[in-house]
Length: 336
Image (tube, rainbow, N blue to C red):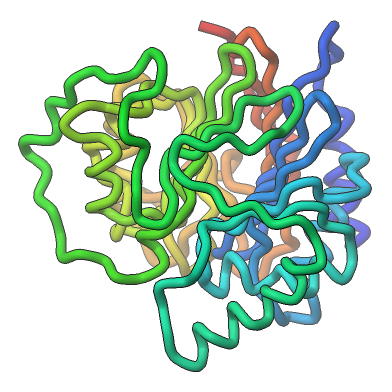
């Protein structure tokens, strides 16, 4: 834990000072789940998912340590993108350690059975202790200092293109749809975060056909600077029809050592027009060196990791910096 905290403190002091406060995004290693802490220049916080339960509260402790190092005393909004163990399972242990003001979700789960019911039952009492916001496409999560738009939720997409989007998508014609996905993955809440000219998209675990709905026949999202790789880089998601039309400059993948990071997802990103770099929370063990980023871009190259994360700092002019907590490697991407 001491190593982890020192790494966090390094990240928090490694960015140059600006006249205006930057947007800070912390990609916390929850080993194949998701936990992304977003801190607005206003100081308000948004946590996207809370990782796994168990492991002696490993994920909750990593999130709390990151929040404290970032000066965050409470989670103002906790966004539960969908009801799967690696996203909502960590809510109870986390909420027992740090106050959560508002819980955001898509409404009832579409999955049944004991495991699914138990997962929601563990989440519900904590949600009911705070404020509760059910969102639909087109809604905004009211974080002061940011524009956080919901682009997907409960299996539905925004009905019309966002401002500046709407171009015809030539990749739709060559995209083959897959079998419909009845799971919670297809219900994922996806958000587009805008801070001045900077744009970051996170579609959680949205699957192939739903990505198609968002991107075809026109691109309803537009172009982005940073793409949080959908579904941890699993080949159930990451259709070229959406990834390549968004033309991200940087992709950040919250994969695990044995989860995500598929060669198909990497190839789609690697051939996306304008992509400069791919950053990973973990080295993908099974895919080989040729399907992983260079070592300096990987927070945890070892399977038995120390839980290092990645941090992004963005300014309103569109410039941003990504830093690897493990080695301090940092790249500044200038405004375009």
